[in-house]
Image (tube, rainbow, N blue to C red; front, side, top):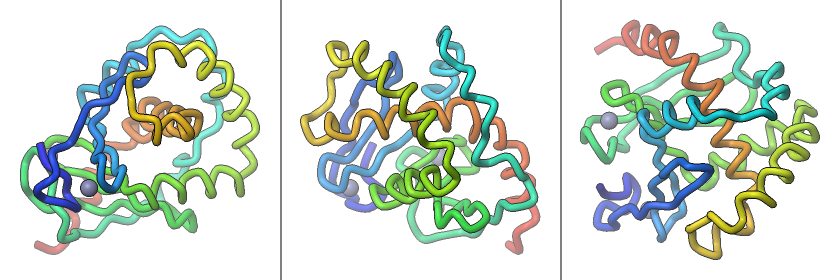
Amino acid sequence: MFCPNHHKNPLEKVLFHHVEVDYCPECLGVWFDKDELRLAKDDNDANLQWLDFDIWRDKGKFAVMRIDKRCPVCRIPFMEVNYDDSKVKIDFCKRCQGIWLDRGEFKQIMMYLIRKSDYELLHQYAKNLVVQLWEVFSGPEKFREELEDFLILLKLFNYKFVVQHPHINSLIEELPK
Ligand SMILES: [Zn+2]
Ligand SMILES: [Zn+2]
């Protein structure tokens, strides 16, 4: 599997909270496979009270468009999913339902969370988890610094974005061919 940005760069695996995620060592973009997200969702987690909040709560605020970048698995063009004023752009594959996040997009999500003030709660939560996860984390040093943020993202995708898939799919269907 190759990076959608650097087509000659093979993606490497990193383990987060029992979930294998693929990333590009060059640009640090991250690929979330649908099955990997599903596995994380089944993961028993006693600290999920914070799930009451949802940055993607309003389905009416999603917008999708076709872009040039391609899914590393299916090789078809990604759909770029936008939400409201978040400036968050998520590259979504309509066939395999995987998600690609560029490093910049990753930062935008964190900025959005900070603006919406749900961040403190998440941050506390992630901090606790990070302590537990430190020893099992198999990724590169570069990622370690951002492990907390990354974990928050992973959780958001597991429990929230994935839930929106059916709606995003129907928006994709409505796009002009
Ligand atoms: Zn790359
Ligand atoms: Zn795909």
